[in-house]
Structure formats: structure tokens, C-alpha cells
Image (cartoon, rainbow, N blue to C red):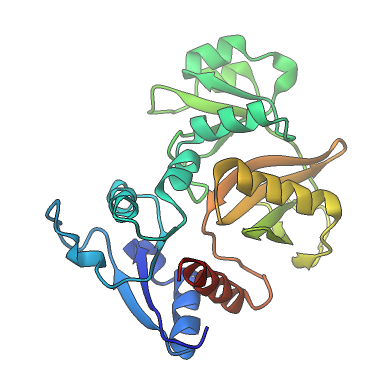
Length: 272
């Protein structure tokens, strides 16, 4: 695409020091495109006044705040192209809704439960432990808690009325991340935040098997996400999907900034 485009980057302040969306911004500017950086929490908005997104060719969102989701929805109602769409982000923001979709999809996921701490402690079979507890709206691994028995579950310091409880697998200390830009998938080995490494294994890009590629593509399509990361673990039964997130940092993905810029500009070109 030769002509200059005007790209809106709608990003929460907490992401403005991270690889994304700043890497995408730098690459778009390097190519001569105009950027409009929008913080959804920096000002207030008047309903019906569309001036904040006037002139944008596309709007790329990074974040999950209620304000950001509302602005994405607003722009979409006026016909703007958005990445990711508000509906897709909302579908994975709520981990209960995400888990329901995974459970109905036939994709390989650990057994997952939903209920209050006392209900979970009294109902989950003992042989299903250890269990990892997750808040419904948690992100970036915040609020996760591993419990090893019903008694430990019952005594857990958990402020929310309900929790997601998922079977927790011991691994070799490394997780697998599937990064996706539409149908293009990369597999990255990363150190687990919970399991101690049994031996030192090089982190970073690993060969993408047809099984992993298919898994990544199916996860993205299930939620309608264009930019996404799928957290997986490798078990004796094969890969298990832990969760999916919208617009990750694409750590260790070769030429990630260029890949993202190519995709954003291609989406604009499809509309022209």
C-alpha cells in the first residue's frame, strides 16, 4: 500500500511502555503512516460526538477496560474497522464465558469448574487436585492461586463470590504460547510462572507442527480474534489449552512489528 493511512491506536496507559502496541506504532511511523494515540481513560466523551475517531482509517485496540471496550463498540457502530473487535475481546475478557466456549468446542482443555470456594471445595473430586483458581476478570496472571486439597481450597483467601477452578498439571517448567495474527501462527516456549524448571531449556521460537498450527487457528476463529495468544501446556495426552488472550506482546516472534503492520494495513486495503 503506497498511500499514507491514518491509524488509531486505542491503548490503556499500562501498555504504553510494553512491546505492543509501541512496536506496531514505531513500524507504522517508519513506513510513513500517521498515528493517533488514544488513551480511553484520559478524557471524557460526549455521546453522539464522533470527532474522536473522525478521519481514522482503522482503530487498533490494546486493553480490556470498560472504557476501551465502550469506545471500540462506539467506533464499530459508526462503521470503523477495528482490531480486535469489541465482541471478541469481551468474549475472552470474561474467563467464565471463555471457558464455556472452550468446553463446548471440542478443543483440548483441562476440566474446569465454576462456583463459590465452599461449593468447589465440597464438590471437586480429591483426585482432581491440584487445582488452580482464577478470577473471572483477571489478566496478566493476576489473582491466580494453586490449591492442593479440599481443605486448602476451603481455607483459600478469595474475595470474589465465585471462581473458576481448573485442573492444574505439573510440567517440565515450561509453557507453550501460540501467537496468532489471523491464520498465521507461531509457537514460543516460555518459562512457566508456577512450575519449577527440571532442566534449563532454551526459550523462544520452536518448530510449528501441523497440530499446533491447527490448534492456534481454531482458537482464534472460535472467539473471532485477529490478534491473539493462546496459553498451552504439553501433557502426556498432548497439548492442553489453558486460555486465550487478545493482542499480546508477541515476545520472541520474528519480525513481529512488521508482521503486525502488514496485517493492519492489509485490513485497511480490504476496505478501500
